[in-house]
Length: 101
Image 1: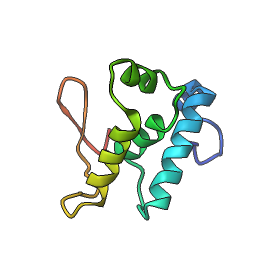
Image 2: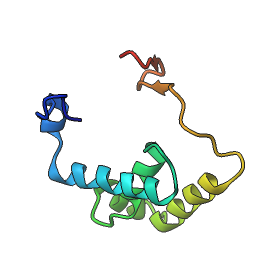
Image 3: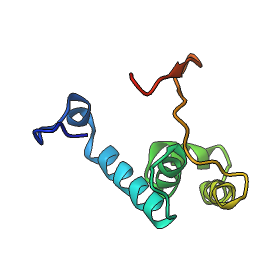
């Protein structure tokens, strides 16, 4: 997130303190799981563990249990079928983002 000179990037400068804390929590979750990467699943777990996060509150408002969703994600991550990260992130329109972008 920082350039080689140690200055903040434009994207990092836009992150709120709350988002920075969420991403740090996701990194901690990934490290605790023994993963060498931080993926969307780690970010989702960090969000679901924050009862004040708007998505977590809305999930609860819908009658769903954020803790149960987090447990299911953890179950998938512990399964034999869990795959390590790929280079194929997708945009909202479904197109693939390449590693060079």
